[in-house]
Length: 277
Image (cartoon, rainbow, N blue to C red; front, side, top):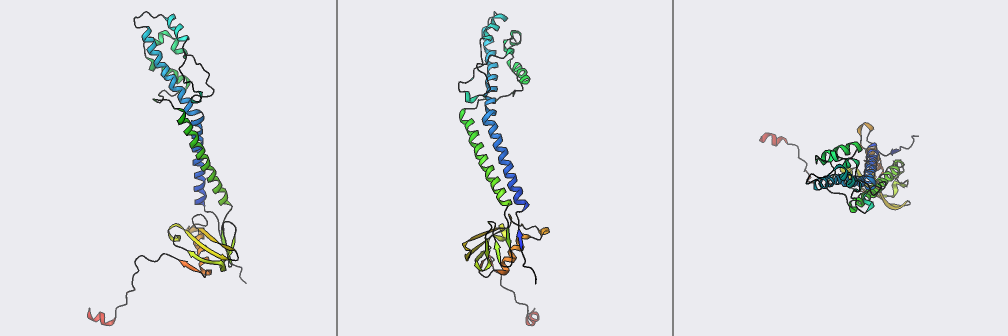
């Protein structure tokens, strides 16, 4: 006696790879927005105000030395009393930043300031400290920083959803034998309970739906051939074999797309037609 035929369609590598890519992608996005919201935008604000301080110091030096009477001692005394003009809202700045921050030492140097080339001084200073030499034209406000946190949480939620789908699908499969179909949820539905087979999306999207009503209850089975089994010819098309197995044992109603333009059969030419020609 032959053993009952059984076909098991496990998750396809294509689906698992796609779910893994989405998990990695959303995780990377979440990390990027987290860095921007927690430190990135705040550090850029620090650079913006430092950069503006160099420009302001240059203007102050030019004003005080307009008549050429400014001495190195006077400038150093003035610069020593100055601090970087940061905003009062500390949430816009790095948490580790100590305030007030005095002017950088390079701005105290009378000889370096005298040529009034603050851009060169800034490039030297930013290079030494590993800062961006060309900061943005405007600082980031609190709304923009909060937006980074909002998008971060959204990406985390999407990454968690992708991880859930990936882990759940890994443990699932669709199987059939000579008596029943076992759904991806683990429910075993006898073929005698199957009432309707909808194949309208099978050829285009690899989707089919089975309605059942009987000893196993009432409901619908969703067969996704691209997720379970697949259609690779070198693997003998597991999803297609499963569907052929179901159809061979299905006795209910089948819904399929009919040809859009039915073609009437052409009769073979008779001897009389050939004679007339």
